[in-house]
Image (cartoon, rainbow, N blue to C red; front, side):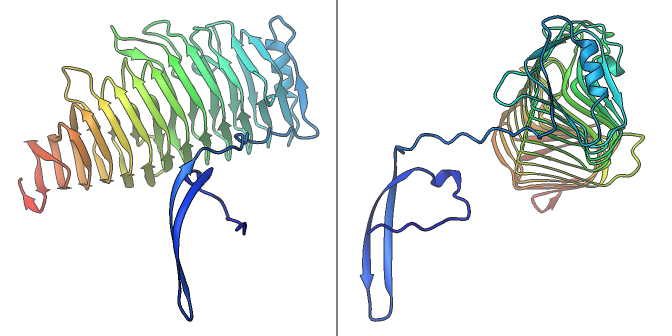
Length: 405
């Protein structure tokens, strides 16, 4: 007899076929069924997600084969409220495309086809050399585009101010680096704004110069973003920090950062001096691997609450350095709760400077496990997180239930 029992949603680890053996025990008023199972190869083909449907009133634009900068500029600025511009194919762009204001406007790639922009010039006059720039937009989106920098130094995406905007599903790659005065900051950059979501983007190969320790970041959201969400992004092989955020309040979760090899760290969180307030920042279920410097940098992170938990960091710190998973620096970091993270084969667990009222506990550490409290650390509690070195001007330091300074 075969019975089918519906599930609300099958976890991924349960999908497929299973070979079962078991025992049935029957009593007068009940029965007990015990099963043992082993996964078998599924005979069902993989199910692809359904293609994204285009809105019925979407405008679809195809490349001319030449320079399409003016066509795109006109088309972007002509998007009505609630409208969608769909790029079908790869467009050649040699100048900044900028638009201001507007509500619920979307620029997106055509489903199932390589669609987006080929950068043809490094001389973009937009903000920090921006190529596609939204200013003061509300409820608008840039989605599912490929942007091939073709080794030109330009800032592909700039979203400034506004509220409830979305940057999602972009594939940005091969952004060049032209030198020490390069205006380009990042592949995705934003300043100000409320409830910006940056989700599911893939960024790789942004340039840098190891001789001058400078380069281009993956994502940099600056100047006091309010309630920003950065989630499910995959950033690798950057010339500077993979993901840098300077929010009033934020959620940063489930991102992957790898190979920050010229300057900076894998992640950086900073309370910007112009931030309107210091709220809560939550950083969890992120992974970081292979950084020249540290894994997570907290710079002047004097938040009401910053909660760093259930992240995994591997291989942080170049040979000859003592960088590790964690680094605090510059002005004071306060109220950080750092717990239940996994640290594997880093040059150290981390180093802290100018930190106050912080708790670090319950870490799984493989390899070097020293936390260096280098300077000016006060009211620090460390439990089950390796060994601690206490440096200059540090006080009220507790390690595994014992006061050491």
